[in-house]
Length: 261
Image 1 (tube, one colour):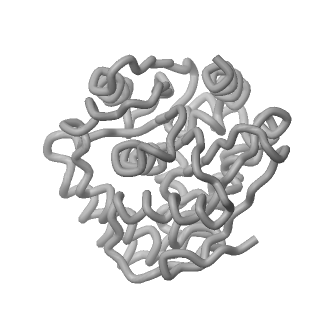
Image 2: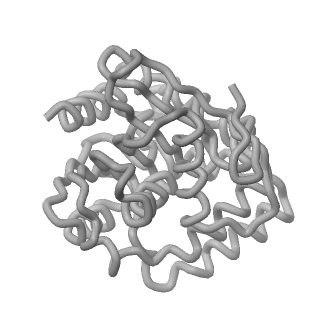
């Protein structure tokens, strides 16, 4: 279905039994709510699941950028309100994890448990120009030029060698991302600087990362876990950036155990 909040039309789905605890899912750059198909299926017996496509992704509208993490987190709060949700667990992957951290800091009254996957709390030293380069490349060459290099960053070589079915799903989602949405979110990422604020997160927190993730490496997740009081870190073997797609069974069981504990 579609919901209009904060001046934009969002693709959003709310599934699962009435009255069950709510889990909100926020996807990575260049994917959309379909990235959570398998996880949603695993969650809906026990949870009510809200998933959405962020600005300029999937079938959600794209407003002119640049976007900010605060604005993207405010979109989630407004979507929750539109569905009558006042409190939720929050699961975010990659930029979704950055949004989840921002949400925890700026909308703490809405948060139960927090899960941050394949993410960062600050940009690695010297990496800021990378985002300007990616924006320029997308403007010059279009989204199609991003498909293969992005997929190669997202999955392990073993997944490619085995013909992992999630890889083609990921390629399709990249192609469904609008140029405006991609660039707007790149601007949001390029201003990432949350580490100094994370000690203020009060929610029980799980941090998940793939052992072979090069873009948001294990050390970055260790940094997040060290900054959030009491946070627990789970490293998933034989997985890269799209850990929830590459190792869905491990991701699902880890997540469900944490949410039910």
